[in-house]
Length: 328
Image: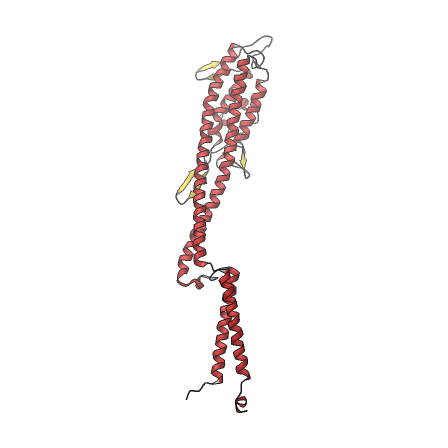
């Protein structure tokens, strides 16, 4: 004869209740987090793979953040280089127009404006740092604030304050680009032309490629200063023509730098797109390994609730059962 004790039934029902409560708690956690588990222990043997995927995800996030920062810097750098080029091209156009017209009135004022455009590009800043300063981003790399100050400087090199440490950027596991440019590399040739013209305008001789251009005293002037004005003499025209040739060479250099910057923008954008695609793929992999369907979690929660209610009813029933009930 098999004997079933009330105490045994009670303990079994209590155990079922505790299990149901555990399932309910787990279902609630999964519903709240939409994850299978809230810690690595809950994933069992899959935890190592999940940890490795998360480490890769973190590394990719770093590359994406770096890529976005480099992308923004290169965009600002494109503006800076374009302004330097605009200053040089504008100066050349003004000189060519003046020579063609045979009149030089207002040319020096125009050149002053083009010089300021070039300087604005050389001293362009991004997030509080001067782009073309190299490792010295806290101070303007191009220091002459006017043509007069430029002409008074001992040489072109003295009006540049950048160092030689061009910005380098890591955009991938094994991809590092020299993304920075230096103010003197970009602007020295153009600056020399502006300096030559102002020195000549001051009445002092200028030597270019072994040829010395000496301003003459043109009546009614009593000094050689101020020759770049009024009617264009053959002497002044020859000097300005030479400066246009120098401008052409300098502009080619600035254009090459701008093109190189654009090429790097394409490289960075391509690398960034690759990292972002990897991020998307990795996120899907992690969701597949760690995610839990909210609809399933709701179903689990409801089933656990039903089981708790059933176990509770059994316990209540057992508590109210006695031998006297059976003897009546």
